[in-house]
Amino acid sequence: MSNPITVTLNPDEITVCQLIGRMRSLIARSANVKDAKIGEQDGNEADVLGLMAEYAFAKHFNLFPDLGLTPRSGSADGVYKGWRYDIKSTTYENGRLLCTTKENLDVDMYILGITKDNTVTFPGWALSKELRNEKNKIDLGHGTHYGLNQADLRTFTTT
Image 1 (spheres, helix red, strand yellow):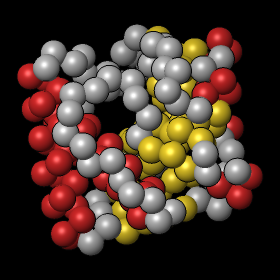
Image 2: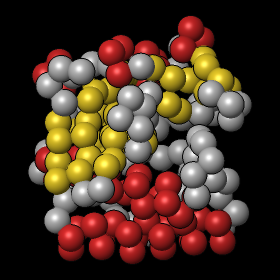
Image 3: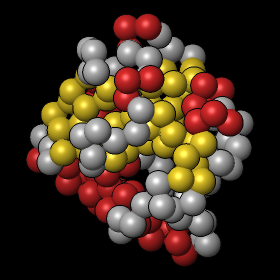
C-alpha cells in the first residue's frame, strides 16, 4: 500500500458520526431501505463506521460531508474533483474494496476506508468501471459482489 491517507478524528467528530450514523440507520430501516452491508456486522455499526469514513475523507480534502438524514439507496457520498464518490468502509486492515452487484449510475469512483478506533486510512480507490468488472466478482461467504485487493487500487496521487 503506497501513500495511504490517514485521518484522525477527535472525540467530538466521533460523537457526531455515531449520532448521525445511528439516526441514518433508524431512518433507512423505517423507510424500508434494504441494508446493503456486506458481512455479518451489525447494521447500526456499519452505518457509523461508514459515516466515520465519509467524514474523515471530507475532512482531509476540505469538503463538506453529507450529513443528511433522508432515506436513500445507491446515491453518491460526495464529489471529489468533479467525480461522484462512494466510500466503502471496513475494519479489516487487509480489507478489500467491495460493492454490491446492484448497478449504481450515481457513482464514478469507489474509495476504500479502513476504520480503526478514531483513525480512518484510505489506501486507494477505483473507478466504478474498474471495480464493477466481471473479472472482479467474488463471494466471501455473503453472496456474489465485486471486490478489489488493496494492491489493485489507485493511490490518491494518481487522481
